[in-house]
Image (cartoon, rainbow, N blue to C red):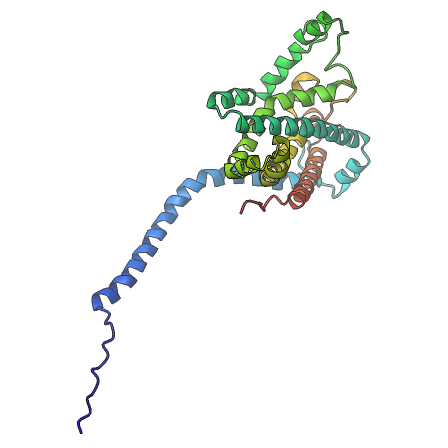
Length: 320
């Protein structure tokens, strides 16, 4: 009896050419990736140089000077924690911090609400590029120029603002010369200058929200107000959180508007922390003490940023 043997199974053969081509292509891609390294370093170098020279080195130098007594005329002398002890016992420092916090609350509150309203109107009613450019125009103005212009406009005797008030039968208001009005006025000047930029950041976040959600809500008969609270705010939260962090940091560093309008007056009513640090360093040449206050401000801003980031969950989005 003859048993038929089955034909041997043919396995796919890998050609020698193919076996050599794949490793070669991997090596070629690796060489190409390595070739991009020097080019990437060239592009990164200017930014890295700027970071090292204008940010990292001054920060480290300032931390060192905060433990010294230094006035530019004599070498820095190590004094340990003396500057920090002096800062804790300095009533002007705490008053400047209180004034700064007052400014931050007014600026953040008014600016965030106004910017959010403008962004929603731009997104829901019109998306004109010309209108967005008009909204951004005040931000393009220098802070010093904006401060001087508003100083003239709000002058008690000659300013157009008080001329309008008098024309309406109201008393003139010393906006920048009264302890009660000075900080709110400076805060509103900065709101006017920055609200357009903040609104465009929020507008960019609104653009990422799918229109299908709004259309489905309209079909269900949901009002615009309910759509704002149920759709817009939850989905805008990550962008709004980042904007708040940036705005808070910028608000604590207010300087130019105070310098050109009130110079810290009247009676230290606008002596914000940055202006007090500037006066200590370049007015009284107490660079060690000014550095200690700067380090304290850095710590405060770092803590506030960390808390804001965690509470607002800035790194997470509800968009699936």
